[in-house]
Image (cartoon, rainbow, N blue to C red; front, top):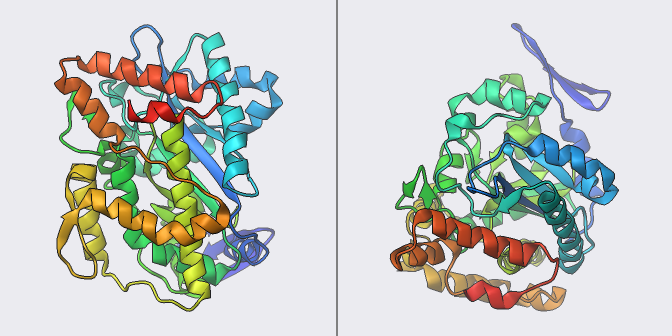
Length: 406
């Protein structure tokens, strides 16, 4: 039995009573009163010792120092471990507004970090720092995560970028998420930026995705729900069976966000350069908007079995842009690089409508890091080069597209 009162869900059965920390009906109302195609950006950075570039557990220090800057203070958040920090743009009316706000907040973060003697990294895994030496930050949410997941949480020293896109209408938001499921592997292949882990080349294009998405429960590619009612029924099940108490314990790679009234895309690795992050965010906004437009026009997306999307997910994890993906209509393999062109072509109508330009590099972060290693650089030298490129492109708050193809 489930009843709602006071802004939370209270779910009980014969054994126990669980007080949920979110309200499903309130989430529906947020979507019903929402605005299409607002944008919010979230980027996660590794906190590093500037001398040896290992992970440094200084989140709390950096967070406290940010209190002197109200803009930055409101934009920062912790992400599981004390050697990671997230910076958020807040809600922008469109992609350009969110990018402008995020550039300002990044600049403030990099200035503050430098003044504290801290470096920041933006590859999606750290190449050598030991996960066993990292401490979970002391918040109620992350105490709950650690208690519930144990090793799965401890092992997850990963860094990503998330993009929120406003969608008006609860049913519509769920169906947009359904429509975007087949797109997830292509976005992952484009963003792959985590080849190194535990002091060696993992052989994967995105070790982050294998570590996080393949380990966490309620993660990766969600089932299609078709309607808000079916989606809400599943959340009720999770509450009734004491599987979750927070909606954020549903870690899917694309999900409706109940607090913001957005479709949140969570599939991508953190990006080495600011230009890549902004271009990728623009492509994601366009994909969400294109899916919404097609729904509005009554066009049906492909009915793709989850097993086929999962096959493409593995191919993207393993090979990124250098491998092949399955064409989900013909079931024939084709170059992953061609999938990028197809995604750009599919999203072109709405990109023109929204004024979004997308300039992606020919090679993703994983490819460029491996090329440096093949040219004779050590793993430490490769990572130092990525940290410097991150500082040069994120810290000044100005777009520098020429750096992308380095």
